[in-house]
Structure formats: C-alpha cells, structure tokens
Figure (spheres, rainbow, N blue to C red):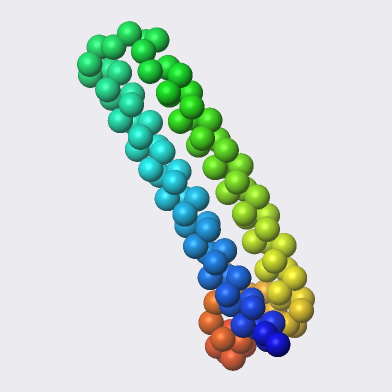
Length: 107
C-alpha cells in the first residue's frame, strides 16, 4: 500500500508541474499576442485583418486563466486535506514535496 506521505509528495510534484505549464502557456500566448499586434501595426494591415485570430488567442488565454484558477482551488483543497490527514501545521510556502521528516524540522 502507498503511504499517504509518498502519495502527497507525488501529487505535489505533479500539481507543481501543471501550475508551471499553465504559467508557461500564458507567457507564450502573451508573446504570440504581442507578435500578432506588432505585425498588424508594423505592416500597416487593415484593423480587420487578423481580428478573428486575435480574438481566438485571447479566448485561449482566458480559458487557461480559468483553468489556472481551478488548479489553484484544487491545490488549496488538496493541501488542506494533506495537512489535516498527516497532522502537520500549515507553515510551508510551497507544497511539501520533501520527506515528512524534512517538513517536520521546518515546523
């Protein structure tokens, strides 16, 4: 049987990776949006050219912001459950991805 501490560590690592990917996507989409706007301005395209693509990139960003918010809610919920289950005080700034022994030394 998988010890809860090990399961918590695995979940914390996977959650951290998912949150980082959401942030990386938002940064890449913002860079894309900037490139698209620069192309519109620098090439003197009509304001109508590319508008659909601009709106779609913006919608994708909005959806990832919503997904990121849900990840953060899940993070808070899982962290609360983990702290309650293992009986540690909630004093960490990041998810407890080290061993429980390491975490109890901090507390």
